[in-house]
Length: 228
Image (cartoon, rainbow, N blue to C red; front, top):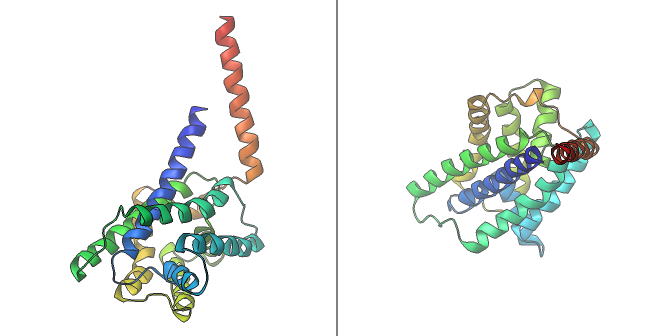
């Protein structure tokens, strides 16, 4: 049970760190990140909040990655829901200040990219299933054999174009994020010796079976302790 708790703690820490990174980039006032430009565009044209738009887009992207037989794990589903919810929560509580000058904005963008990369590392290394956007990154990395930085850059630029066409806020920070986030992820992954092409994500069924084993073993140990 302790291992399950530690895994879930790592998973949700990753989600919250990602959400924090997203808000840092949003509040830089230099333009949102490519995906968030897309989410803003959807929010501006619908009744959805930015977090809700993120959740909807997540479901659409994961539907696409299943065509490439990417495993849908517990982490995949939780990612789609909680990063969006945490993003709305951080925005609502005004936990992150809003930049009022270029220098602080640039610093916030760098912090945001590093937080996003760290959060991605934390939850993706749990091997409980990729998040929608990171699942797309993993799938394309495996198919093309190209570096994470290249694949992430292509994905970010695609999201940026779509978001711009929907009226999302684009600024100099948007292009910094589009070009730099992949390199930040590469840096963090290398720092923690993570090779995404070697990850073996557990499906929801795999996680369920593993949880049953943990619970059964925990009960057996409890019975043994009682008998002794």
